[in-house]
Amino acid sequence: MSEVTTFPSPTQPLQKGKLINKLYYGDCLDIMRDFARESVDLIYLDPPFNSNRAYNAIYKDETGRELPDQVEAFCDVWTMTAEREQKMIDFKSALASKGDFVARILNMWHSALRDSNPKLLAYTYYMAERLIEMYPIMKANSTIYLHCDPTASHYIKPIMDAIFGQKNYRNEIIWWYDTGGMSKRDFSRKHDVILRYSKTDSYTFNVDAIKEPKNEQQRKRYEMSKKWGDASTYRLSSDLKHPHDVLKIHAINPKAKERVGYPTQKPLSLLKKLILASSNEGDVVLDPFCGCATTICAAHELKRLWIGIDIAIHAIKRVAKSRLQDNYRLIEDEHYVIKGIPRNIEGAKDLWQRDHFQFQKWAVEQVEGFVTTRKTADRGIDGRIYFRLKGYAEHSSMVIEVKGGKNINREVVGQLRGVMERETDSVMAGLIVLEELGAQKKANFIDEMAKAGQLDDDGRKYKKMQMLNISEILNGRSFDTPYVEGKGKRQKVLKVTE
Ligand SMILES: C[S@@+](CC[C@H](N)C(=O)[O-])C[C@H]1O[C@@H](n2cnc3c(N)ncnc32)[C@H](O)[C@@H]1O
Image (cartoon, rainbow, N blue to C red; front, side):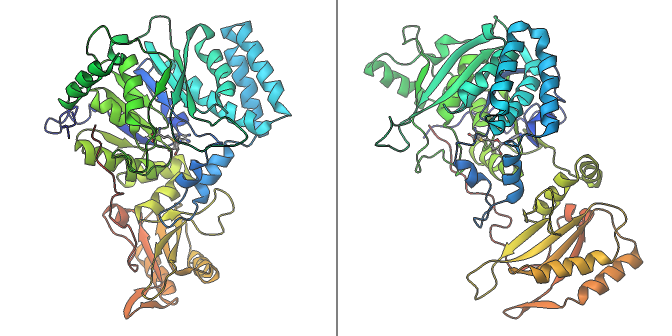
């Protein structure tokens, strides 16, 4: 087993405040808008696509229940609205400066899909909106790799032609893998597509770094040098085989050491190949849909700096963070920072102002809860904490309500109690308030809550209704409930070794 190269070394943390390595939690659309122009050397993105059933698995909690808000966010991508239609028209005129060819492509694409497949039109617009934010943040010599499947690539390619320029289209890379099913009626589907575009004609391409061994003897030498843990092992000699656009790389099998259990995880070696080809040590690699941080791990091992973004807090906090820690001993705030997640009461207030829904989601996750609400019609539940009562096979839950506003009154307690009593599997209710209540108000709330009585779990008593404010939560307090499965435990992540 070889030592994994770390960069920066865990014993030599970069100066705080100057960290480039970042994990962001949020929609990459909003986050990339704040990036400096021409600040990124390579972008790899592996966005969601409907044909991939694995997405259902991302949007489930640890008890196997669906997380409706995330499912909804995903389905939302497929809904065409009047507002989206207007934005798309604006988008087309913004791109008109790129010439008649681009305008024609976009018009054709719009009118072809508008009536026949509005969902697909909404998806392509979703992608276009984000891809157009990537263009200005790319340096002149940078490259973008977009990973999708063959059911999406032909819709996304005209958009990339429009944004990056048809002349900057470089490759359609086939990632060939040997897993997947077989059909008696079709050729087996064994590949994904990776579209590669450069920003300009002057782009980084390190051909020697990705040459493959020509024969068995060379392969052995190659494997030997890999054993020595040299990050530049792919550079063996100039007579290796010239790389072509079909990459034969095994998909991650269920027993693979690098597997972390994230449903759409991609192989580290695939990412390493792309990063080696199109960046150099010290360059900045961005993955705006980073999932379980495969791109980040590859970038780190190859001594690149990195930025990852994911909309699922679960991906950032539970998976990416622990993968970085377990594999490379990278510590939050020493070797990288996590952004988009409030750290103090000011940050929490700021998040509430920016986005009420994200604030509620964040607050629920702080107390080990799962967000179970839809953005609309939440029927008074913002989340749930699941636990198992002694002697019961099924999970029970505490329903959670989050209140961000300043003016909340005692009626909230009565309503929440109604929700707790209405929902079949809920036996407790928790109220989270952003602002600390005045002493009298707090006493009134507590009196009202006490009327709900206590829960008896095999002799241990819990107040059925409880309240916490955000400052208390930030100080580490949580609701007093029966044992919450997975609480305080990081998701199991296996070591990456090659
Ligand atoms: C296919 S997965 C990426 C998997 C990743 N390549 C890996 O190896 O783990 C797509 C990811 O995009 C995230 N996502 C979806 N919409 C997003 C958005 N608007 N901004 C940022 N991330 C998003 C999903 O939560 C999911 O983790």
